[in-house]
Length: 207
Image (cartoon, rainbow, N blue to C red; front, side, top):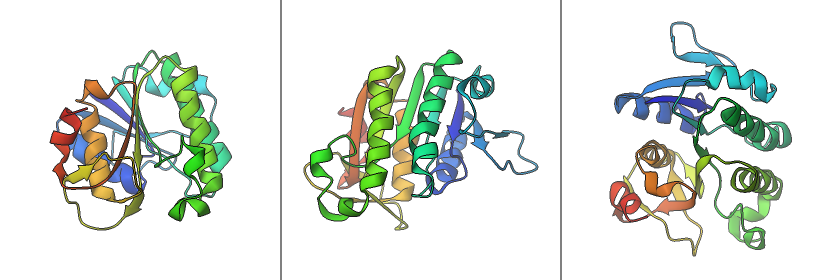
């Protein structure tokens, strides 16, 4: 499939691009700073208007949104930038949309728990971005909500238990994201993940 990754140069995005290409997909890496020599690295600024972004997305089979400002530009990037990309995806006639989000961002009553207490502004931005995706678009979406991202080695094993917070090696998050493109049973679903004991393929097949 032809896949477009928004946020392709981020920590998750780089691994996601690599895994999807290894799986045989044609992957276009959207970034504000395309690297010379990569024909599939495309200039993409999610601060642009949706009509402008849609021209870049036309012809792809699915869009991944894994961009984030890491707290530096929450309104324009994590919130409005995400909405711009959703609108552009619809304008381009693309249906499948996979969004990287954050644990419990759609459950404000849990934002006072653990490390979430220090992420209120971030969670507000993610809440409204996810809410827009679910309620204001007709996209075939999947929202992935990992807990804390770590640099630990990949385990290939996760849990979708939503009762408690957890951590996730970045490589495992990328692996789950890559697998979602071949998991139609996750369309219209919000999937929360953390490290666990069950192989990723087994967990996703059970959704």
